[in-house]
Every structure is written in C-alpha cells, then in structure tokens.
Image (cartoon, rainbow, N blue to C red; front, side, top):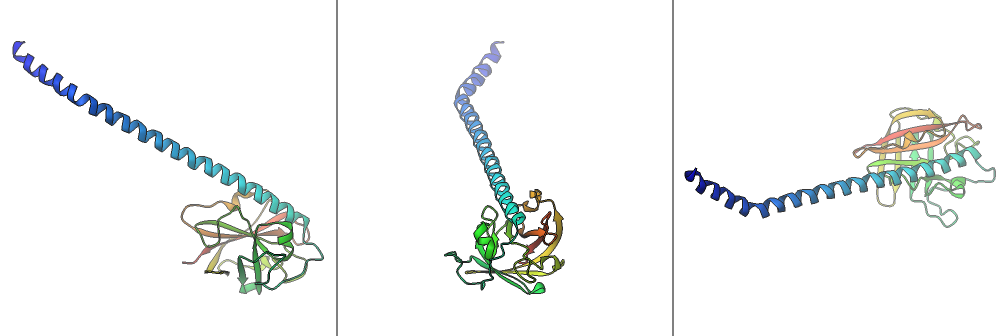
Length: 215
C-alpha cells in the first residue's frame, strides 16, 4: 500500500492540474453547442418568415389573376417607364414571339401593363426560385396569352441592366391556385417560374412554366 501512495499522489496532482483545463474545454463545448443551436434556430425562423412572405405574395398574385386583365390596359414597350416604375428586366421567349418589360412587385397596377417579379421570391439570376407572373390576356400575343404554347427545352431570356440570363424550360404543369409548391427551391439551382391563369378566360387553375438557368 505504501508503495502505491506516491502514484496516488501523482495522480491526484495531475487531476488537480488538469481540472481547470477540463472545465474550460467543457465550457467551450457547451458554448459551441449553444451557438450551433442558436444559428439553426435563426435559419429555421428565417425560413419560416420567408415561406410566410412567399405564401402571402402568391395569394395576392392568385387573387389578381382571378380578377383577370382589365380592358383598358394597354401594351407598352419593354424598356418604357410605367407609372413612374422603371422595368427591372425584359423577358423574351422567341418561341411565342414574347417580349415584355418586367416590373418589381406583383401589384394590380403593375400587372395591367407588364410581367411582374414577385418581390418575395429570389432575385433574377440568383440561386433559388425567381417567380414572374402576368395575366393571360384576352388579346392573342399580349402578356402571357400564348404561354401555353411553350414546350420543354424552349429558352426564356431575361435581360437586366447588368446581366443577360438564358433559362431552359424543364417543367410545365397546371396546378390549383393554392399550390405554392411551385415556388419551392433548393440551395443549388437557379430556377425561373412563370405563372399565369388557365384555361383562358376562366382562371380556375394556374399554368406554371419552370426553367433552369444555363450556366
């Protein structure tokens, strides 16, 4: 027993010396865990806020599409100023001879004259899902009147003040007006979603054309 006493004393000494360090490591670990939890909570809350904003924005667009195009609305040139609003982009689809100004914000006034970028969705050309909505229009060739003629593989061109983007159509679908899944996105792809009503003159459903950016 006496022979073991020195070893016991050494172990006790080491334990006493290491205790502050062990406590420090434990405190650092717990702090890092709390930071990770806080960051995850922040991301979750941001995602919830984002989804809520998109749902509200999509509901507003859906209501405007249900109301239909106003008879007095007139066509404008793609780069022309609209009621003090400067277009953020021009959308072109050669397949259907479409060239429209894109205004920021899917409001009733903006949708009278142009295609509109839904403000709560991803900015054009960036990772995520950028949505553009427009009335189907009664007059052939106006606004998104001929969007139903678009086919898989067709190109959608977006020109902003700084960049030109070319998207290839990858999916075409008809959904219920409340189906917000068409605005889903991930952290890798750059999508563009075009939204209008269908069938023509009824607005019971939504015609969705989705395209992916060609890099």
